[in-house]
Amino acid sequence: MIDRCDNPWRGQGLAIEGPWPCEDVAAVSRLLALCPAHAPTPLRDCPELAARAGVARLHIKDERGRMGLGSFKALGAAHAIAQEAAAAVQGDQWDKALTGRAYVTASAGNHGLSVAAGARLFGARAVIYLADTVPEAFAARLEAKGAQVMREGATYEASMAAAESAARKLGWTLLSDSSWPGYTALPLLVMEGYLQLADEAADQIDAPPTHILLQAGVGGMAAAVAKLARARWGDAPQIIVVEPAAAPALIDSIRAGHLVDSTGPVSNMGRLDCKTASMIALKGLSRDADLFVTISDEQAAAGAAILADHGLATTPSGGAGLSALLAGLDLGHRARVLAILSEGPEDV
Image (tube, rainbow, N blue to C red):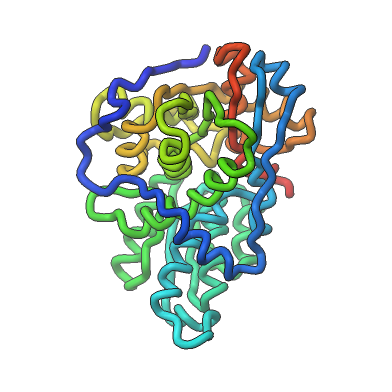
């Protein structure tokens, strides 16, 4: 069973203090043009999966190879750090632009890799707090990128509280991919980076989609893509946000009419297992999204298995939007769907 909630705030958005998601993709593109690792990721036309899902077309934006980091998150924190480096650089000494700075965050996955990569590129330190549930293999990947890894707490929320505390005590820069009252500037830059994937997809697709599927944890990527989609295609596409049933932060807030904390067990969609939405993301999605749905861990695992069988190996998190479609989310046989494969499999 897929839980679903039509968005009653569509078009106006919830009355939340703070900025809206931005749409200035040109600022992102200018910085990425300086990065030798940058190249557009492919948009895949998947007729066999479309037939299985009962839709006319299915386009999948494949973020698994993004800048060698394995996920769309490469566009987020690293972009925020690059913007700060651009403001501080002396001459052409980019590798020393942020010497003496330390960025700290909590991560349930790829956000930490983006912080680590961005910090190393510009001469800063990266300190990443991980919950006890995050696999040791991921900690090793962070350390290989030059990050210092700290273990704290049983949940993502506990590790984030530890990162906030360290930032206050030690004068480090907190770089979260979420936002809350009084903390919006850097998360807004993180979300700005995600505009790049949406802009690429809009240029690559041969006709505007009728439906866009966006998986969400705190909601940053979903809100950024939704904002750019509205800028490019107006109100025509139906934008659908997909969350884990164990972490229904956005759908609970939409139903409540304000930001609320959600509850639930640990999900196998670990990258999306966030019990509190980003304030900026909720504000944007309450205006731009049409429908919010949740899927079970079992549906996410089944969807990931189907994707692997079609040569699109990913995690339950990375394929969650597609898993909703494959689990029976009925969009109609004429639907032209755009979805995002947001990360590669964990063993890569």
